[in-house]
Image (cartoon, rainbow over all chains, first blue to last red):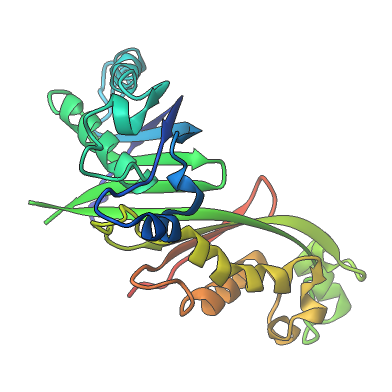
Length: 143
Length: 140
């Protein structure tokens, strides 16, 4: 049986943002019922931790999937849009979408995936910690 | 075309004692197999449970599960295990070794039907110490 080797690299970065869960098309009481204290009018914040996992062949010359010197600034550049921002107001991503951890992980996945497109490796998974006891994984399967 | 996957993991902790011992084995054999985990009066761990559920992201709420409902579903089990001697006070472990593997399975069995729908239980990781963990999942 032929074995296929798989190597992944995960880069971890911390950033801070605030958000609010609120739907204008719902009554106040329904918003409070569904989103609880996340409805606070002025938002609230978290120290998010992003773990971006990339997959690809290990280069024979460098021994690397991707050079962290390239990956890290690329990720930092993406996070600049979100770090120390109010996600609902200061970014365009959440105009029609609640900035839940699930949706935020999806947005980050799309942003990173697009940037990595031209590179030698592919984004395999995004893990986004909202607090130390809660995280979301987001990935895609080829169909 | 690619299919999106999203899981949410909530982390819970509990502290419990156990002793690994099998009546079927001689004392010497118990010692040999279970080593210091065979200590007669038990020993304890701070367990960390990573409970992963999966579903589609709901269009209206942006969520795959209501965390308050998930906590409500999980807390009775945590309550049952927390600050207990598992192999003495939990019926299931009177017959089955309270090993990390079996505790993970017990948690799965107890929660698989309790996760708020449409989310479903996807994966369990149980840390026994900061150095070892057990993964358990049953495929659909």
